[in-house]
Length: 239
Image (cartoon, rainbow, N blue to C red):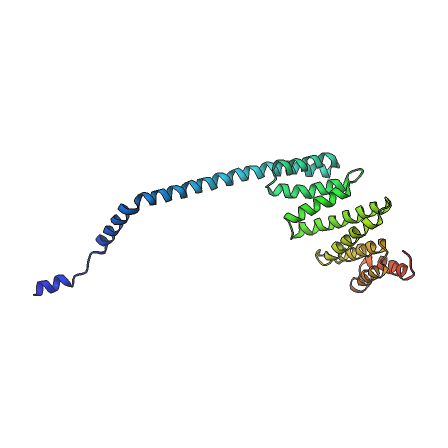
């Protein structure tokens, strides 16, 4: 009786039990497990190769873009524009291709003669890829300049109706940048530019509102003196 009681209360060997369970699992699912591990290994290797290829592609694209940037700062805008387009065409999925749209916008703006319409289009493409940050705000500033310039060309060419929406968009873009740059002088400059656009389309009241913001909110800046002069002109009915 004592022997039976002792035998029935003894703990089982956990290691042996675990081994039995693992052996049974392997007999049933061993091949499936190997297949799954094989797929994971192939996927991992594929991902590694993809990242390496992408890294190499980005390296080539950034190197080419750097050449275009150097040409731009040297004043070779036409050649720089060609390089920017090459980056966009050959490496469309890279970060450098997005930056190339910004460079292409700069090139089009500074060409002789300039192509403000293309400049606007390139800046817009760039901002689709980069919506936030200091570089995006800098591109918006360039976009506003290009919009205002293109609108001015349309006015001179006798297309005032087509110029109006561009002037308005330029004004909105300038005003959206107020406070986005650290110095107050630049903020006042944006409001002054917005007022200038409204004056160009015959909306003196809108222009006056922006000029009053300059004198009221940024009265200590150099731009405030210009704003006071322009405000006096607007009040006197000078277009």
